[in-house]
Image 1: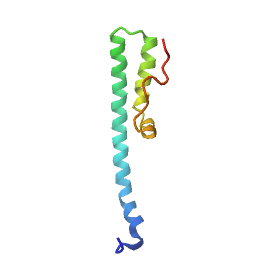
Image 2 (image 1 turned 180 degrees about the vertical axis):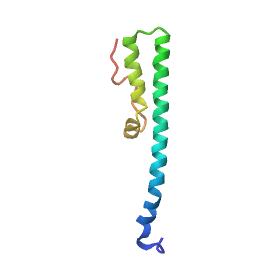
Image 3 (image 1 turned 135 degrees about the horizontal axis):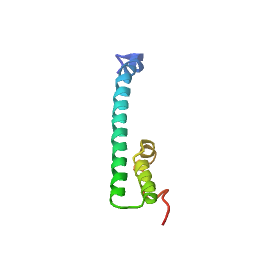
Length: 87
């Protein structure tokens, strides 16, 4: 490490664009899978005969649980019961 001296920031910056591209691509793939999963969840609930006014809050909660912000903030996501109306 001492042989690099003050070049460590430069060495780290060399890898930053490739890391950003990789994380960005992985994030976009995750978002696409999440969107497809929410659509399939909503479709199956409707197909099973659940009323639409009950399907939408469940689908919204399912969507929010996969939020990257929420996962990073809490580490585990949130509970399903948060934000849902009691019937």
